[in-house]
Image 1 (cartoon, rainbow, N blue to C red):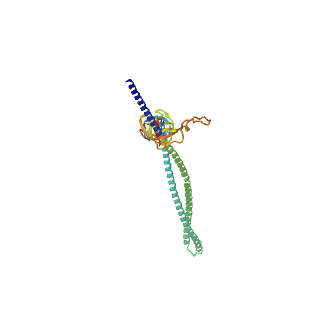
Image 2: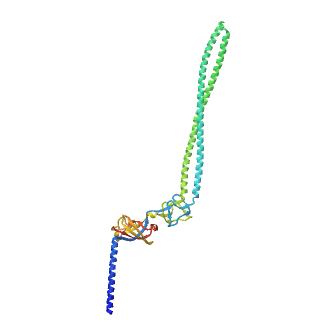
Image 3: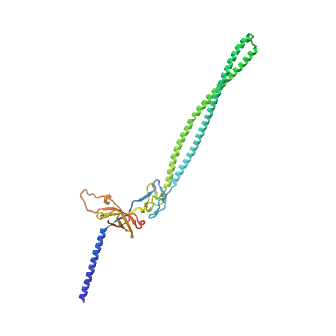
Length: 381
């Protein structure tokens, strides 16, 4: 009976051993089959091509407010932080006051130029009309004098003739007296006309001199217009300064350039920052990918488009899936900070790793953080 029990135990042990061996062979077969179908590695990192460092690009100052903490979501254009804007606001107010004063000066100068120009043109018009009137009067007096000279010449002839006749008692003395009286009157008229002609000529010369002075006053307008042009240039310059001051004031509010998640906050309220100094680092979840450093011995069958199963160490109960989008043309060691120098003949065979990018197609991407590690299985073609 004892021998029978012992034999049975040996048979059971042998059966268990056979089962274990079969199970091990099956497991080994499945393991090898799996490794043949999949490229497996744990050199996996969560990466992104768009890690945006956000800073106050043009201004410096003390931070008085921050609105987001690390890990919080942000929308594009959302305010992230605020600088003390008092110095920039005062600078803007000063420039705007200066520009307002220049505009007032420009308006006054423009009105003055328009008034003086209008006055000169009106006076020129009146002076030209006066010159034309005086010239017309002069021509009329000259015509009148010519007619008067003809009458005087005729009367002087009549006077001589009647003097001769009266001396011979051939004509009454009264007729001679009438001729002499009329001649005296015409001579007085001639003298008056000559005096008027001199006065007219003097008036014409004075009007012409006044017209020349009015033309000379255009130089004053030209100087004022030159002053106005310089004033306009100054207004343009200060307007540009006002626009720049408005931008600087607007730049005191730090806004998110992209929608994403705050990966890092570098400053808190009270910190003094300079232009370009990072305040936040924001990552766009849509641009997150998996970077795999795959051994060169596992590259066979791995091509763009191959599906992949991803596990992230931080979330062991979460499953992610992806697709190979790029196999980089150089190994990771090629761009190491201290690359290997094999020129001296020293050489140790080390399997190189080739960077492979995987786009995540399935899984809670919003949980991922740049820099997390994990493992991946890439199905070979």
